[in-house]
Image (cartoon, rainbow over all chains, first blue to last red; front, top):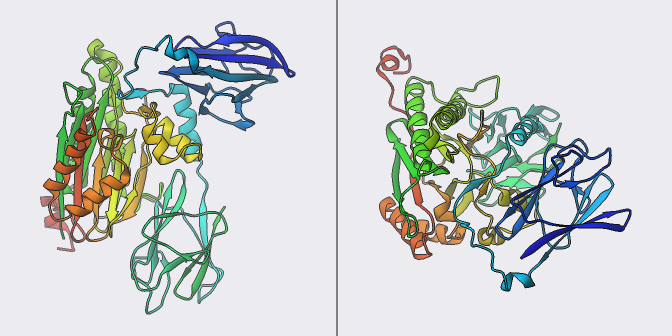
Amino acid sequence: MTHKFILMLNDEKISEHDIDKEATIIGRGEQADIRLDHRAVSGKHARIIRVGNKCIIEDLGSTNGTFINSRKMPKHLLQHGETIQIGNYMLRFSHDGQESKQKPEPEMDSDKTMIIQPPSQAKERSKAEKDMPLGAIQMLSGPLTGKSYELVNSLTNIGKGDQCRIKVKGFTVGKQAAVITRRHTGYQITRLEGMSKTRVNGTALGEQQHLLADGDIIELGDIKMQFFIK
Amino acid sequence: MSIEMYAATDVGMKRDHNEDFVGITPSHGFAVLADGMGGHNAGEVASEMSVDISTGFLKENLTDLPIAEIDPETGFTRESVLAKQAAMMANDVIFNTAKQKPECAGMGTTLVIAIFYGDRLTTAHVGDSRMYRLRNETLTHVTEDHSLIQEQVRRGLLTAEEARNSNIKNLVTRALGIEEGVEPDVVEDIVQAGDMYLLCSDGLTDVLPDEAVRLTMVEHMNDMKKMADELIQMANDAGGPDNISVILVHTKKNFQRKKGIFSRLFSRND
């Protein structure tokens, strides 16, 4: 199977590049395999990694970013026909499935686990994750109406028990009725115990955890509260 | 007041050696699982080191620790902070060993640490080994893989089923021992009596869909050994392309660590 890029500038085709190496660098610098001469392109802007018959594009921490189908992506598994935008260049990705029958690729040991993260990227990513958004809960009814709780802890429990950070009274409310856990991907709420069901935007929580979105209304017993991102 | 743990590991059908490593420490309520990779047979060095180092570190530091005290700086419990430190320490040692010994160059490992204390649990993980929770016959992912394919699933570009059938599912975006410093994902959650937790390497989950894992767990709720054996057998029946490891943790009631002599003598709670 051959993979190639058609390089285009202002809707005009400039050149074609076969992706025949394990790693192909795109950038303005001299080490780049595909050189794009434009000031919005970084020296080493992005690279294409070939894994078996798949291609992955990875932004190498460029100043202006790599866009796939108009979305900025740090990393992306390329599909036939997708367009990569770097600076004012467009690269159209295509792979020709026909040829693979005549020239079978050496079989990759796809069960072998491999690591693809370049070190510089890991640092950037972990920095980004440290800046995860802070959520809060504000009481919309009951004796504590208006009070808000910042969800700084990794875990915040809701219920009538003494150990709960957000207290909700009520005969049917569990001691620990629900828990909100903080993750890199956001805040998740899980129901735990009690006859009174915890509802999010009117829907009772099932056994699975639920990812909270900014503005979600949480109801427990006759108390309403709102989740928001600060 | 008890948790039960059971660990099993199997070489699988296609590999000639096992690069997974598992460790359980029921007295202190924690379990560690690692899936090594890279280098000429050095993957198993990395996975064993990561389990040994984190187990030693956690044992030493958990012994006299008050249960679930919050570290005001991070908002995590002290146990979570320790789990993170354990993973980072293992990373340092593996990374330095790989630099010094040519036969270990390029080795790395995934790691999952699960600590149970009071009615809580902390999970710290790096890579694509996983932890699941079975509660009331519902199976939930506790961890989220650090893999390229998981990033695609998160963005909605692939379904979970497509991800399992992809041929790039084994590309991990984070691992221990590859570079200086590592950022483990740490999550805390509430444990309920009757929960069953499963820690496993990708040798299990690459070949078995979640529903097959769930049904097997539900069927053998009363026998952890049978549950573990059956899960491994199913992965082998499906081809067993990789090493398969499982650790099961069954919570009966809130778990309290055994206290060390020092705190037994001086704790006011006793």
